[in-house]
Image 1 (cartoon, rainbow, N blue to C red):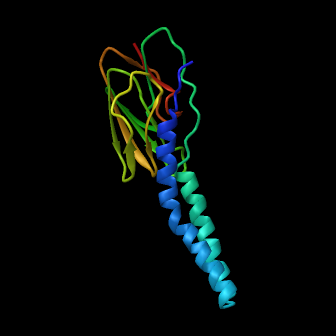
Image 2: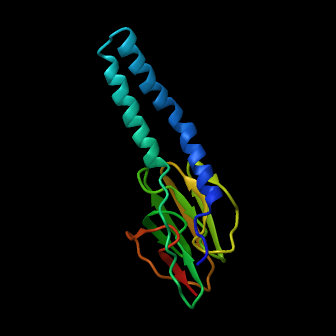
Image 3: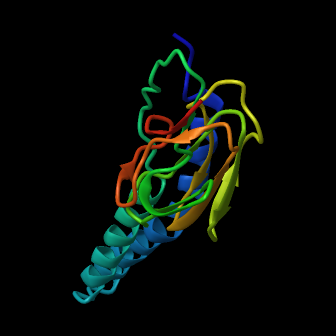
Length: 171
């Protein structure tokens, strides 16, 4: 079986997570120092804020293991986690919430994916393997998938989709 989450991409995600976690960790260390040196009891509240901030960062950079479906026909997979909010002609709109996993997966050929988000990092533009990790979105997002006319859309509005696993369309 081929590798769907390459180690170098996971390492890049870890570096982004550590970079974002510096401030909450510093906040906890400073509050601990204030409590120990100056005996300020209210500094414990800074520690709690730092801990909650750190938990949010861990959740933002969460990437799940992927199990792409095997299919004899050509398929198009969901590029992100989320909920289908609109299907119009050959356009599928998926909304990703803040607390959903962050991975962006390669959907397959014959699809144009447009993601609108503040915090999107791509590791590669195109992959040769459907379901492969190609980037992360560490916030909420809207994804519009434009599928060619020779594919039949297989999902409905309101369905929750899993990145690299849920089949959007079949040829």
